[in-house]
Image 1 (spheres, rainbow, N blue to C red):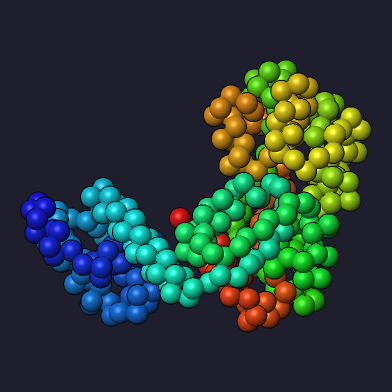
Image 2 (image 1 turned 90 degrees about the horizontal axis):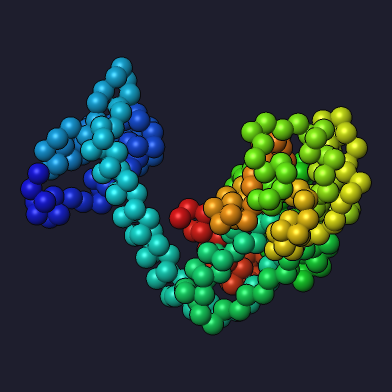
Length: 308
């Protein structure tokens, strides 16, 4: 393969074609997604194969499967296209000259996962924009959203429902897992029953919160009353500290649990939580985007954070 020729001849159209092929696998779907003709897609594939001097797809029935070279090329294509999208986003945000403020309410189990990246994106694009963040649980934060104290609320949901005067959208899905300190007697268990786990102290969400009601429903689903030996807290750092000192169990978002497990602080226990509070949504008042440019930029940054 002539690297110099590839560098000179590879185009954004080629990159979009190979990235779409990796996603859809069908020429017809690629053509629809990119709003081009099927012969155009086939032509771009042939050009790519000529440039890299090796097949990038194999054909089986009516589907295209990427070869190892094709998969690697698709990985690079996605990275380049994401960077181009990021550049366009930055330039557009700077051109808007946003200088206002946005206030965010967020549940503690979501804040460290989603907000650092979102805030960094917004501050790089609009340094003079002000962002304030308040952590809590949905029941306490939602009235503040309704009253206008917050511009947006981000929370884990249980049984999503329509809310008058409020718009909402799903952001992502993430499993909640049961964790313990690495010295907990159950830390080495390869199989575990809920009946056994229930007998230990538990760190649970605050009383009357949506998360607490969901956890209580989960125990009921397995045929048990909620644990009576419990500590109620919305603080994940406090939970980690307590689990260092006490053989307690708690509930953590899977991504954070894995981070702390890699540090030797927590162990993820083999218990099925049946999709407990796995959906994260954001909520805002109807018409909010028409009156607050900072809110609009924050929502764009939120989408960008989720896509990178």
